[in-house]
Length: 492
Image 1 (cartoon, helix red, strand yellow):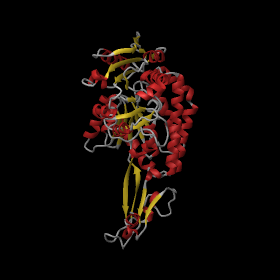
Image 2 (image 1 turned 180 degrees about the horizontal axis):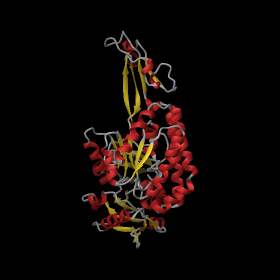
Image 3 (image 1 turned 180 degrees about the vertical axis):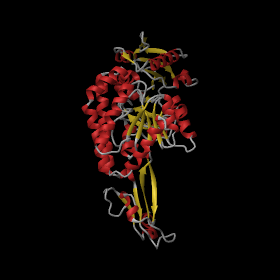
Image 4 (image 1 turned 90 degrees about the vertical axis):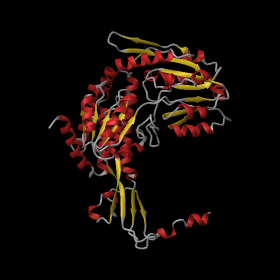
């Protein structure tokens, strides 16, 4: 038996035990994981700084976010609403003939493979949202470590596995594999039942195709990138021009632009008069990029954008490659007229991962809703900047069709860890929709099972009449079907 098979077998054995764990125990284990991360923050942040080049303040904030996310999912587990328990009582007088007792609820999907991200070494890595939501659902997780922070990944997995097992979860609940070949082999393993990924469109699509080509295909939840267009009305710029310039520069330059929610295209009125304010706000000390591969990709993408017809510089920015191949950057802001951009958008529509954005300078009567519908497929976010009296209804409706999150008078970077958050969107932002942040993320790693005329002693606890887990149960009593629709008709 090779190492991949051994890991998969351990995950499968853990899955059988985890499926029977009470919500309170699982929640306690998630809190213990969060506590362990916090207790080891100094060591973990130092490792992350050394391997990624990200700033200490950013990493400490991200580690805190990761711990809070684990605690949020602990609350989600105890709440039990995610189980979606439905109980139809047996009904001999059912409107369509006698109805059996039918009970359904969500159950763990099985071992989950999580491909860790490079740009969030805590929040989307070993202990990140995909891991937290899969564990909360009652699944063991195998994490494929990101090559950008291997020592951090190994240490986080060690700390996490120990905390989970000490809290009472089975051995094999959290495991780590390294290397591209091992990641692909694990994705193909028949004992893996779902996978998650945060990264590039090219890499995510390749893995999604592998998951779909398996003899028994599995769901692959990939977050693949986004341009995150921003639309600002003339009145918004007139009312808040300086604030807009400062917010734009901060959103583009934060963490060297290495965020999936960085705004890549900003539509605003021609003659906005913000060049000087934007250039001043974009001035910053150079920041190291995550690794040489990302730096080289950013340099090439930036060169391609700046050489496109009609593009002018607002803030030149810089790229410096050191002797180790590491890239050091400052933000670049470019601009292009809408009448130049719209006929040939392909050169400027692709995501460029790094601190660059393009201002698309548009006539005051530009139809932003039409631009969004015709130029964009699927995005993580669309931002709308408006002023009182602006009618942006059509734009907002178009945004809701194209993105998972529509935000107003703000910037898409900074994804709040809250129950209602939606971090996902139509293809190519994600492969299967859903969200990787917020409590709804747990829905990706469960599947519904219905039990018909089952004896009480064999039902899952959540479906029993005595409800030992004390979870919400939606009950359809006998006799109600003959009156379905009557109340509605009477109200009409």
